[in-house]
Amino acid sequence: MNNATFTEKRRFIVKLGKMLHKYGTPAYRLEAHLMEVATHLGLKSSFVMSPTSVTFVIWTEGHEEEYTHVARVDPGDHDLGSLADTDDVATRVLSGALSIQEAEQCLEAILHAKPPYNKLLTGLAFATSGGAFAMLMGTSWNDVWWSALLSLLVFMFVLWASISKRVTHMLEPLVAIVSAVAACAVSVYIDPQINIRLVVLSAIIVFIPGLALALGFAELSARHLVSGTARVMDSIMLLFKLYFGAFLGISLGFALFGKVDFIQPSPLPRWTAWLAVLLLCISLVVIFRTKLRHASWSIASGFIAYAASISSAVYFDYALGTFVGAFAVGVFSNIFNRTVNAPASIVAMQGLIVLVPGSKTYIGLNSLIEGQSFVHADHIGQQTFLIFMSLIAGLIFSNVVLPPKKSL
Image (tube, rainbow, N blue to C red):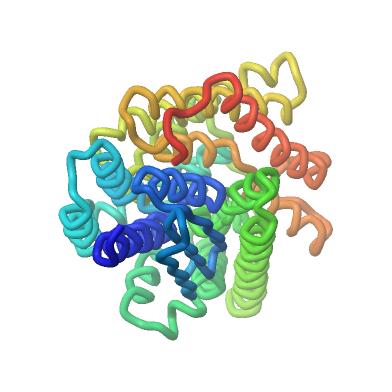
């Protein structure tokens, strides 16, 4: 292998790895996929991925050529549309449909492509996700409407953070503080029938790191200890920042506006839970930038997760219902992987978000600090732990029953 050929291949592998990392690929899937690509290109390789650093070691069979690349990177964010496009480029390289030079040009085009959904649609998705979560919690229409409006307020700060580094560094506690103060003002001057703490949680639900915690535990179960530990600790610190912001904001709101007696409104009918799942999944299609051709699969994943978990919970414990839901989502995502030849995580994300207990962790933190829970939940800490374990076990079992076609 001449020097030019080796240089082209290792440059492609490094760019591919960094882009897949940027779009939120877990370490154990990313390392396996890059090794598969390197082997196909006739190279030996070793990779170490973590949320904030990447290491590439690539060499030829006889060690005539060697290359090591270490870089500090930011934690990846979920961009499922770009992930699908990037994986498609790698697939075409492996099939021989693209040369290395053409593949690099394609990756560069993906990197600089405009977002598939405009700011207005993304703002509506934020509002829908907040309202849908409140609806899923089965509270009241008052909480649903105000959660949606406060989620729009949160989106304004997200837009501000995109042009200001200072706001970016304090975004999570800032949106929690603003949401809490606004919720307190609404309860005093407009609507005393809102559950303040639940409305605040719903407004910032996009930031609650339930999915990141689940992925961190999945990495730990795959014995990717550095990446898994880093992801879990980052999620815990994010949860602390959000809770502190909400705690401070509610305290400020009570000091500024005072308190009013909470008036219990009429609860939502049970059928609204299914509407909530639909609205939540549609909003996540936009927030995760999922391609429209994959949207129906993604929405179906959310319904499968919810239906499997609540139907099995009738016969088993709630945590075991989550295991059944995760198993069903894992099998369905692997069917998608084999049918569409795209990463299974594109549809698995939707189902996992319906199942992950990030909100329960937040509620448990509130119970620990304030000694009270703003929704009815017995043994919240034990439930959260069991649900996380059930999620990971369900995904592991699903990969054994129906292995994915590709490593992503």
